[in-house]
View (tube, one colour):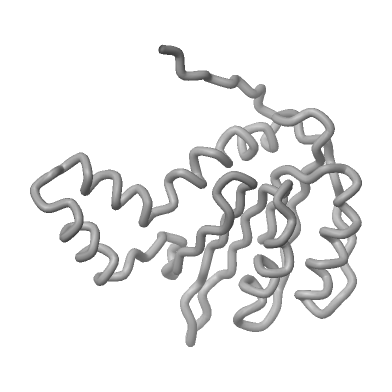
Length: 159
């Protein structure tokens, strides 16, 4: 799946061209207004392709800082799946996924988090949130909900 959560209207045809080039075929997306951001558009597109197509799509869209998107590549019998998330503020996050869609955090990454944190539980929590891409999920969540037709409620930290 390709979810473009927000794109400036003028960029939409370029997104289609870049994604189509990564998939080696022409594509036409059905763009809708993105209620979470004035003037932005959103789309969802189901694709099929060879292993590595998800990485190609994510790479093709990576250079445009005004895009918010997610690419999901399902696992196959011979390869793991993957999930790429991009936001203008955070850039790209990648995680391997298993057959049920769960993110896989490699053993070395967990060991690193434990080493860095030592006995500090808050630091371990911070490191694991980083390994799971929590900041990307947090930033994309209002755009995901808006895409489902739900009203957007922006919460701002005070104090």
